Image 1 (tube, rainbow, N blue to C red):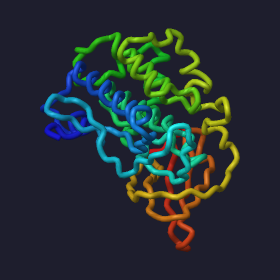
Image 2 (cartoon, helix red, strand yellow):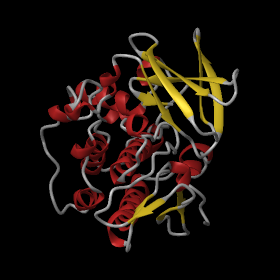
Image 3 (cartoon, rainbow, N blue to C red):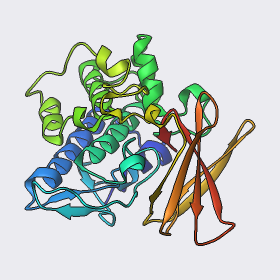
Length: 299
């Protein structure tokens, strides 16, 4: 694609700043693309890897979803059968580590991460940020509660943006990042919101507090990460390998996905803010990878 990915324009090409109109146009294009995958094709297509680096831009800055290497298809009305946990940290829906089953709603969660990324000009997880700002969705939610909505918008826009559209996209980000899959809107609903066909709710308290609305607490249906209060062990597997790490204060944090099967996840509390996850490749006696979950999200 002539303009590469939106990730490159947001983070790697400071000489070419996307204005708000261009960003909003790209958001609507990606939403329409996901709607087609979920509802418009003869089968349901779950992308499973919606992220900024996979949103490609043509010469007119139309957003196109690329890289379908992890996509899965199933018949409309059927139940997706995959139990492999794949995707990119920061875009993984909270229910995925528990169930291992991707769905259209896990694509919706990844789209939420992309929405906030485009508005804020920040990655879903910022390893070098202060602890309160590590996870983008939590930081934006906290800023909203404090009434600092303008403070989350990408400073590179220099205040040049449509207030109504920014608020709409942020609200959609909260709705689509809900911890409870059944509460997330469908992509059809998302497109209708973006096109102004239906209004978004004015009262965001259910989305900002507790869970049932994207909080980090014990959600309806037990889908929130606080349902993991007791350590447990369950098998999952990865299809795509990647690994990286960083050091934050006295914490060594490593994260990645491993191309092996089976893999066991073991969740324990690391502190009041962090959770620790040990990924153990059971075929090898000494291969142990440590990963950390911040505020209930992978990074």
